[in-house]
Image (cartoon, rainbow, N blue to C red):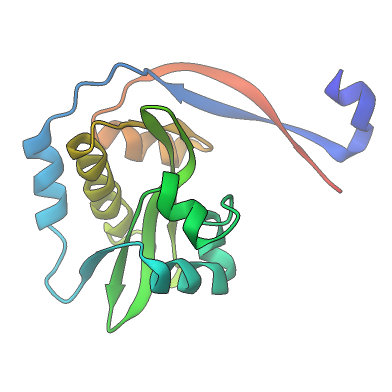
Length: 166
């Protein structure tokens, strides 16, 4: 139906759902957090970091699905990694639901493949667990799935999703 309705504007791709009953190894997650070199810092996304995330194209999805900071503060949760006050990576709630969040991970293109995503994701998962929230992970790519698996998630199934060109 999507392909019939949108024709060439619809682009199918594979996503990777993880099992929703993951029991996390808090010690392993904590080791990912502490592995971050000391020149980097973690911060919960407050109003200042909310606006910093919105100001850059690469980090907008960390907070962009919320109406404003108050909406994010009320139901969202996020963590960023900074160096010299510059946001380099983040993990946050792409969306929120009763009892959990759907995780979004983004890293500045110049700082990818340095372990920042793993560290900030581990920090967010621990924050979720401390607040009795389930940190749901639905991977957009195989790289995202590999990261999720390093953090304790298991693949449930693959499925087809669509992006629509407007």
